[in-house]
Image (cartoon, rainbow, N blue to C red; front, side):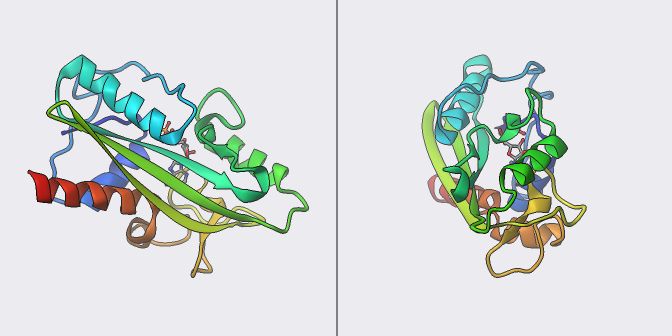
Length: 190
Ligand code: ITT
């Protein structure tokens, strides 16, 4: 099955979450080297847009993940704009710096990661959602993970996602939850 992502960190996580039973084809292996447009106003819309793009080009079963970080004090921002929060590109460090700046002096720091996985199989669409609640820390901590991980401390832990071992992040994360729902659906329906 093609996993429609250009994010190598996501690919690594999803391979670990889904395990040996799944053989994932990357976009590059499927011959798709261009950036897939992500212009929808919602996370679900972008996940479906990415999967439909691949389905329309290849006719192959595929899935895509779109993820956003929703910060309550910022009215849900960066949300669907998480990848391009600070700049036009995917500048993880600049995005973290901007988030810390926007939250300067703010004590209410609750937030969540939300992932929607869109699956297209035999031309039928299905979506699966996973979330994890937490807080935005006051400074970056940890070297692991990617994106906003060094600023996100999940509820029930004293470390950020960038400090926790990858297995722990995958066990409790937005992406882990959504991907396990995908795996369960495939197990029950295929
Ligand atoms: P693809 O669309 O190619 O899959 P992307 O990096 O554009 O990759 P998204 O649009 O889904 O991915 O994600 C938006 C941003 O949210 C992403 O660039 C990261 O900065 C951040 N993000 C996503 N998942 C994350 C995670 O597990 N931990 C920390 N930050 C994450």
